[in-house]
Each structure stands twice: as structure tokens, then as C-alpha cells.
Length: 398
Image 1 (tube, rainbow, N blue to C red):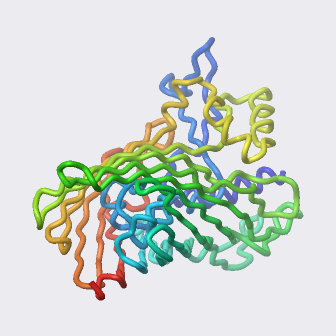
Image 2: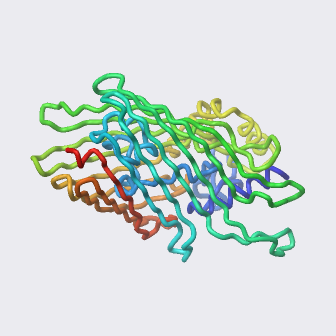
Image 3: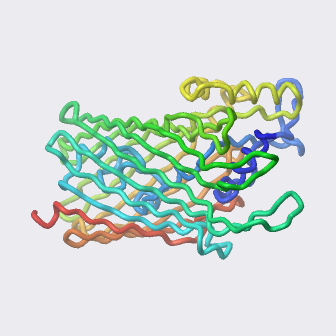
């Protein structure tokens, strides 16, 4: 009963992320094949608690298909890969991003706010920090009979601190510590269980290789990050806990410096959630398997997440998402961006084109991004404009 309670809380949050199917408990086993109830592919979405940690809060990367692991450093680097900060050209920067959520449904009180920044300690080291706040708006709670009990305002937030250091002229590493708080229905009592705010601690590991000394004066970078490695989270005082959205991301970027005023950056990356893939066929055996998967430790689940898909290696490959984007800068003052994001139809089905603009003058910068869906799967950012405000404090002295 408590497991159902926690699943309901996860569903509350996941429904706000545009997932049409949270898991596939109605798939059919036919010999070695697993199909959906209609004979089509089995939809088996990988889910976790606190999915707001995977929302891209950066309008720059958001305009490039949500790719950002290997881009040049800025105030929003902590979300992707904090090791980028070791190669920052400015001594310090601060950024703030506002992302409306589900505006297409007329919801004006659901949004993501993000503040991030960094300070270089010397040419080899940098520190950074960020605050992420996700508001789920006003929600009317009811009892089992549908009688209103109280109005709540569920919210979640994350505080992160990072340290990054160059290990060589072209290679850097970073460690980020996080505190996560998820208050979905604290104080409510369901089935005799009093809900609490879920709390967790997590860490990110980031790595960047960046070469700006190519023969043509171009720049090449590769970035990798394992994020949200931490303890499980619970919304009640019991032993039932859910996984954080641990994630592996690998990306690359190449910057063509055409002349003194013009440059073009192209980037691509892939990401995979490092949490268990649920058993996708209804039945007692499947329920036991899901219990076994959930009893794993967070570290154990990271390694097993590459081999636990019910349909084997082919399903594991479907769990990777892919992003690609391009950015054109004129005189480091005006930027045009575009990108594409792809997720397999059996793993969430999000597919969309992104576009955006960037403006920079002296220490001030503005980035805008816009998302256009290309599939039937609705996205919480459908046709929504989001923006980031940046302050590069080192630019004024230069």
C-alpha cells in the first residue's frame, strides 16, 4: 500500500513532464518477443523520482536540442558538466533562467527557476554553485471520497556546489555536491501514512577535454558527466525508497572560427538514465522482478542499468536519447541557434526541434529558446519561450 502511495506521488510529478506512458504493465510475452496489447512495440518508459533534476534550465543549450555537455563554459554549466568551468574565459559569471511549464494548458503557476554562477580561483581551478526551484502550482487535495481537504503548493528544489580543476592544459575534472528537497504533499495522510518532504544528497562527476590550439585556430571539446549519484528518496517514514534520476551523458563540440567576427559551433550528445528498467509484462513474476530491482543499492543499479532491460541489448539501446545543435556568433554579440532532440517512442517518445537567439553587450547577455514538437507526444515546453539572463563580470575589465 505504501508502494502504491509513493508511486502516486511520482505519477503526480511525472504527469507534469509530458510522459504519456509511465510504464508498460500491459505488454504481452509471446515466446522471446514482448509486444504491446495492440501487437505493436512494448512501451516501457524508464522512470525515477524527482525528474525535475533532468529539466534543462539553460536557454542556450535549450535552443540547441538540449545539448550542452561540451559547449564553452558559462554560468549554467553546473547543470550539464561543471568541469567546463576550468576553461572559462571570464573570471566570474552569474546567470538566471525562467522556464514556464505547461503554458499550453493554461497553467501560469508551474515553472522552473534557476540561478547559477562560478568564480575562477586561478587559471587551474574554479568553484560554482546553483539553485534550482520547481513550482508545481496550486493543487487541491482530497480524501478517498473526493472531499476537498486542503490546498497545497507542491515544490521541489536543489542546491548544488561544484569544484573543478584542470589536470592538464586540455583536460579537467569536477565534483559537484547536491542537496535535494521534494515537497509534493507534506502533512497529508493517506492510508494511515503521513507524508513528508523527500530529501536526498547526490553528487555529479564531470570531465572535459578541450583543445583550442588546432592548426586552423578552431576549438574541439569532448565532455562527459555522471550526474545525480545519490541515496534513494522517500516521502514517508518507512523503508520504501525510489531512485534519483542518475544519468550518463557524453558529448562533443567543434567550433569553426571563420574569421575575426564569425564563428560556428556544432555539437552532439547522448544521454541515458542509470536507473532500473521496469519489468514490462504483467504478472506475479514481473512484480517480483520489479521488487528485486527496486531493492538494489543506487551504485549497483547504475551498473545493472546497462543490462536489465526485459528485451535485452536492443532495448538498452532504445534508452539513449540524442541531441544535436548548432550555434552561430557574430562578433560575440549576436547568436543564432537551432537543434533537435530525439527519444525513442517506447521510452517516452519526445521529439522536437529547438531554436533560439543570443544577445551580448559588455557584461550583459540574454538567451532565448523556443521548442516545436515533431511527434504526437506532448512536451511541457510546447511552443513556449524561455529565457536566460547572464552577467559576465570579467568582460568589463577586459
